[in-house]
Amino acid sequence: MSGGAELISPFETLGIVSCNPKKKAFVFLLFQVFILEGEAPAFLVNHLENGHSNGVGVKSESEITEISVDIGDRTFVIGGNHERNTFSIGVRIHDKNSNNWFSPIVLGTGPKPSKGYSASVLKQGRILVIKKGSACNDSIWFLEVDSPYVREHKKLLRKEVVAWSKGVRGNAEKPIVISGPSGVGKGTLISMLMKEFPSMFGFSVSHTTRSPRSMERDGVHYHFADKKVMEKEIEDGKFLEFASVHGNLYGTSIESVEVVTDSGKRCILDIDVQGARSVRASSLDAVFIFVCPPSMKELEDRLRARGTETEEQIQKRLRNAEAEIKEGKSSGIFGLILYNDNLQECYKKLKKLLGLDGVALVNDVEKGINLPTKHTVSKLEDKIIVQETGEETRNKVVLDLSSLNGGAPGRTRGILVEAIKF
Ligand SMILES: Nc1ncnc2c1ncn2[C@@H]1O[C@H](COP(=O)(O)OP(=O)(O)OP(=O)(O)O)[C@@H](O)[C@H]1O
Ligand SMILES: Nc1nc2c(ncn2[C@@H]2O[C@H](COP(=O)(O)O)[C@@H](O)[C@H]2O)c(=O)[nH]1
Image 1 (tube, rainbow, N blue to C red):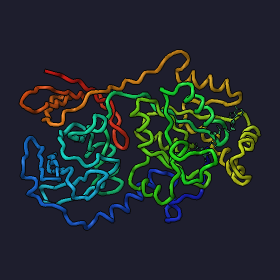
Image 2 (tube, protein in one colour):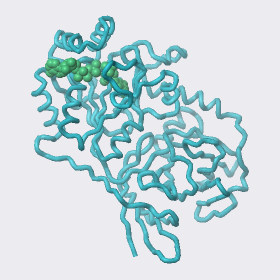
Image 3 (cartoon, helix red, strand yellow):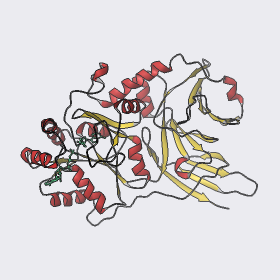
Image 4 (cartoon, rainbow, N blue to C red):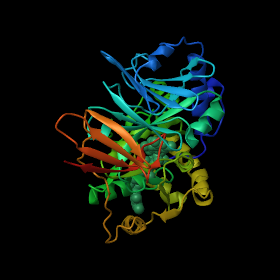
């Protein structure tokens, strides 16, 4: 698994030549902009006249529930079924000055439609959206309307942009990115780590357009993907990084990382140097490790002995390896460099680098507190008070948002939850 500078990419077939995968994703997004232009507003301004209080209003009609949030001259209308999208709730913007409606470009994966929402406007251009009646791990969401990530994309796309990010309680350990030339032993080292520490580490299952090897299983080693489907998902902002490696498309979906992190495990990514560069430029705060072979001869021997590639593919991988080793050592992407000569020695060093020689890593993920289905929401500085409604109860859940970190295109972490029962 690995790749150096690969010349052919799926984007070049579209006449787009850029080395930066992020830029390529933006170009795809630009196509979306053209599709959105000229769309008629799907509902009317007077929808907003119902139930506004403190800048947040709720409209509920049988199966349609939407919430409107005022920020300055704009109203963000979240929810409803105007997008006819069963995968993620819709977002519309009403500009009060021009009385115009916009369908913004919506980045990231948002919550699935629900029968009710509450919302609260936060600092840093974020709206907290609570899905009523959802499981605790799916109830807290953030719609970024003026965060640094959104502003960057607005500038690039010259269009209205909003971005979803799922809220996660507590903080998980930093993900680990492992790169190195094909055949150096990345997969072997990762397997050893996962075998020895199964409850501590989880593997980010990448997508690839290459064909499965005989022992590889879909969803375990890779998500084996159709090229067009994968390109569409990249276009939809679902990938943290992607790259053309040894002639195939590979990528890490945001979901793949989050599935691992949500389970309270530390996520390991096995990706090439181009991918590592993109992750480094993203909001994912990770540890970067580069694995070097003792020599090119030894690398070639390992690739041949593995017996998974044709002679032509081996030659291609070896050619790419030279550039990749050079970049891995000199680019400054990788804070840690490991030589995999003797496997057991290298594994010992890896464990030491990760602080596993004696010290146990504990993930501080709070579990088990559900938000009440029927509630009101109020804000007190950095705390959100979710007050259960009903005749008999005064139970509250307090969400402390003072240590939020992360955000779109990944999760928003650091939510501290306290239940107060009466
Ligand atoms: N230190 C080592 N000494 C000898 N053989 C090794 C060593 N480390 C790994 N190998 C062997 O080298 C081969 C390649 O290892 P592995 O598949 O883990 O590489 P990789 O870096 O994950 O490659 P790719 O990027 O192509 O997936 C395997 O057959 C593995 O058993
Ligand atoms: N940029 C990314 N590179 C990836 C990803 N998943 C794997 N890889 C790298 O591809 C090569 C080849 O892998 P192989 O399984 O075909 O031998 C290897 O260097 C991997 O590190 C990914 O999601 N993104």
